Image 1 (cartoon, one colour):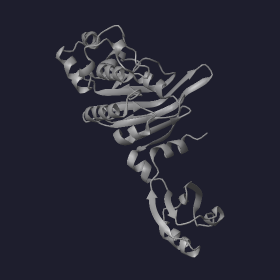
Image 2 (cartoon, one colour; image 1 turned 180 degrees about the vertical axis):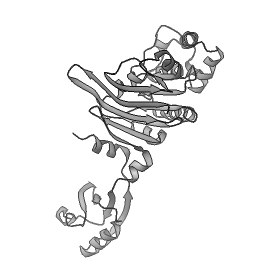
Image 3 (cartoon, helix red, strand yellow; image 1 turned 90 degrees about the vertical axis):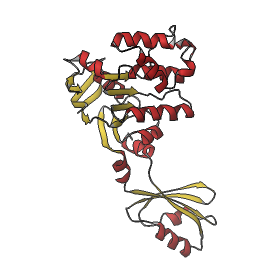
Image 4 (tube, helix red, strand yellow; image 1 turned 90 degrees about the horizontal axis):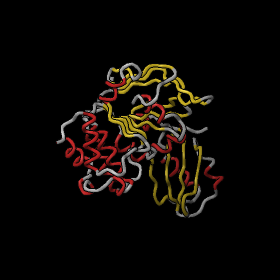
Length: 299
């Protein structure tokens, strides 16, 4: 396993940030680590990168214990923290050269990571002159500099515009082909586009750990959007079998949620006919990750 976490706990005074957290990540997996603010995501990432020590439990990265083999862990991990620390008075290439010297990597690697992360247009500037998005690219380039086996990325797409998001997403997917990527983000669309597996943490405990496709497929709730040709009383919709919620989203368009695996569209056609209505359009919608996340982390 690239990452192995067993019963990790961490407290800050009376507040328990992590409560007996356990999971493992195989080489080549791209795992989205999700949770509300304060759920314990950054704390766990800092433990995996040796910046913090756990109170209890054991964690290894590439077979190296994060407590007893810190240097070997640091050599095999590329880490982009949430608050990306940079020397703003250094030029991009100067900063990367400094880190290349620390990691004892060839100077030629600097140009490789500049190209890989799309830094070329801004690489002649001081870091303090860069936009927030380009500063994130510098942080990602630094994490990739020593060609680590494991990438741990805490909010890697913070501050990026939509075009930059696509570019960095492609970088992460590309490096994830032969590396393990463990990333935290609040952008659910990024997880759906990049990750093959999702771990959700809430109040210091793992509440979900599944392959993304299975997580979505296992949701029994069925969401159907239907447009009728005229207005309808809400109380009539309440009589539909297996219905749990109904919401008027626009004009005569309704979003209906059913708690069943049975396809309810034929029942909606029958309902419309019985009530003198016509269905102008009807579509079956899957739950997206954002909806699942909100349900799993509801207080």
